[in-house]
Figure (cartoon, rainbow, N blue to C red):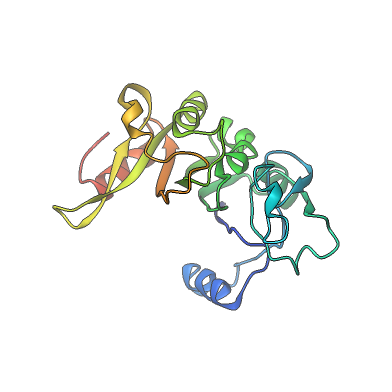
Length: 214
């Protein structure tokens, strides 16, 4: 059975977020929430918080309030999504949404076994100025391509007043697509999607969003 996974960016799940998740699940009784920290490796990870802002360039994969981290020194036990999926018996993920405020590439690295096995249909990430060097769109799309996934930016199509997928990998990659500067104070937030290259799902996404084939 395929799963839809939402990886939220906060460690304290608020009521409005739970309501949003329940709505997304369409009232399904199978909706489950887990209070865990995800990263690119299993073990302790450093978290950026208001109090611990000075360490924000170290393993910046999540943001939490200081009450959640009381007495932790800014560190929490973390695991990769691959490890989480194995523990939960999740073999196939239809869609994974990742939004972890600046270090989406770290969480993506923790999904590499599932991605390498082509057991993730497609996944969306937030590409932004909160990414930290050496992470970049150039390196991310090349990494995803090596696993057999195409990368698309979700752009606004003003003429049609709707979203449009712009290919940002393979022969379509060009430096001009590197729109966000890692670590910059200039706000830049763009959604990106990776999907198995050449798959029927890629064709479906392009047809539904762009009205065209790959």
